Amino acid sequence: MRIPTNIITGFLGTGKTTAILNLLKNKPQNENWAVLVNEFGEIGIDGALMTEQGALIKEVPGGCMCCAAGVPMSVAITALLRTNPDRLIVEPTGLGHAHKVLATLTSSQFKDYIDLRATIGLVDPRNLSNPKYLENQNFNDQLAISDIVIGNKVDECHVGDVDAFN
Image 1 (cartoon, rainbow, N blue to C red):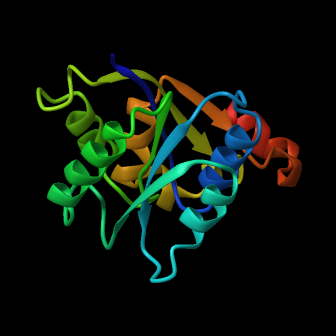
Image 2: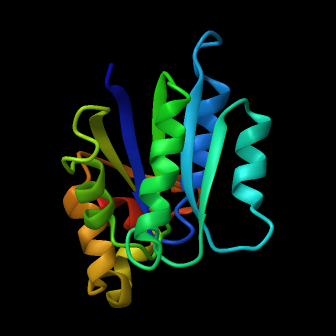
């Protein structure tokens, strides 16, 4: 059986962890979900919060999960798949190379185990007027691989920010 899998990507501060926590709160009670997170901190706050929501968590510490920690990422995915979750969510770091995460998940190593569904990209519309974001390759790569792009934090935006997103 192939596990339905989603990547939730977005630049730093777009609300990826909050969005995943919200999904976990609303998941069907009878389902067991697993989450792979890229954790920079030593404490693993993201993972602790998600575990409280009833998800099995694996953290890939250090740099971008696909680069500096490529082998640990594959090991973590394999460990999560062995638990036979009903869904797998992958949250790369906001500075990560999302296309490399996508390539790993669609590689021959995982093709019989992962059913990759929509990749969701979160954007904070307030950043769309900042050339540093618009010119950043990681930011653009995250948008390029996203099947669905969500403008997050719109309650904190000005009308011009929302217009730039549209």
